[in-house]
Length: 177
Image (cartoon, rainbow, N blue to C red; front, side, top):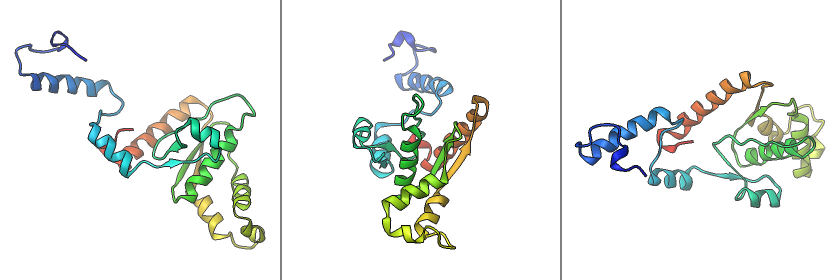
């Protein structure tokens, strides 16, 4: 909360004008414009989906899974199933009709691993594993998961900025991040 003494301009201005000045100054330092509670609720009700990690304990910790339309980063020590969880989320999201951008910073993304996971999830597809044409479910999976490999911060920052801009365009200016 900001008291009257904290406003940067004319203290004699009507409260709404002082608020507008402060709001414009706030916009210059925020990465994303603030949104109203009504707009946030509308976005959560109509656009926000939660994608399961397929790990009940992790889903419980994350409030049901990871949110769609946002960047989710998994960080941890080597061999702590981060890559497996990311592949599983990609599989779960595409099963729900979503597209996934997998930002790979460790050269661990594997289309073969995704295919193996799909075959385990849908055993009837196993007979089509070596068919001359990809089974439609596998083709959809591999088409809807895009991978960008970045190995340093200098390469990562422009990718994140581009993703943020595209999410803003897709979600609209009132949706926030």
